[in-house]
Image (cartoon, rainbow, N blue to C red):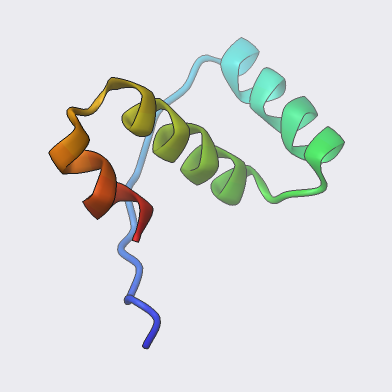
Length: 57
């Protein structure tokens, strides 16, 4: 069963928002999905092994 998602509000500078928009377009993703992927990848690279299993589920 898919997990229910939760919302998060973020404030970005116009430059960061534009960069995110450009990357999302290139990857054919929405900006929200691109941000979710970026955060998940960063967490996987930074989190201890115990956390990695929970992040990737």
